[in-house]
Amino acid sequence: MPAWIDGKLCFFADSPPRRLMDLFSVKWSTMVLHALYHWPDHRARTGELQRSLQGISKKMLFQTLKELEQRGLITRHVYDVVPPKSTIDLRPWAEPLPNP
Image (cartoon, rainbow, N blue to C red):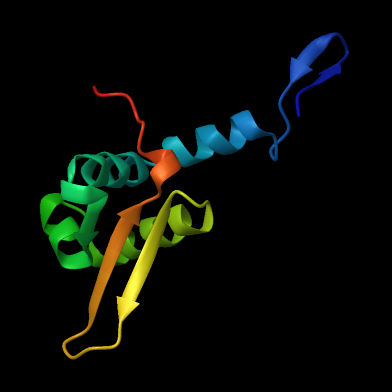
């Protein structure tokens, strides 16, 4: 939560506004959420998502997906099939993002 220090409003590193800023200041987080928002049923396979985000490396995509999953914005489903298959879903409460 913000606090007043020496008469000035301060936002500590763990405050909600700072955590939100940290999340959306990362280029690929915003792009992944935007792509999923516009995908049919807000669900995409990992490879399809990577192909739709020109310039993102596989490593960066998985790092971004891991962070978004930890923050509860997406869910990732891994299926026990050969070849490997996984889907990424935008969480329902994250769906009402504003259109650009």
